Length: 71
Image (tube, rainbow, N blue to C red):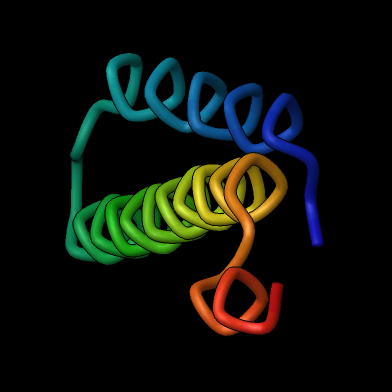
């Protein structure tokens, strides 16, 4: 999986390319749609990466209820 930093860099590069993109024909329009889809997929990966980090941090801080019951 890509690191969070790599995902952010790729998202920034996509945004720069999309901002500078000039649509002149149908092929350009298709290319822009592909870039939008790519950005959406990278954003989803970034959000999943952040959620995974939150879950991992929570799991490290607090013991599970099953563990507390066995003490």
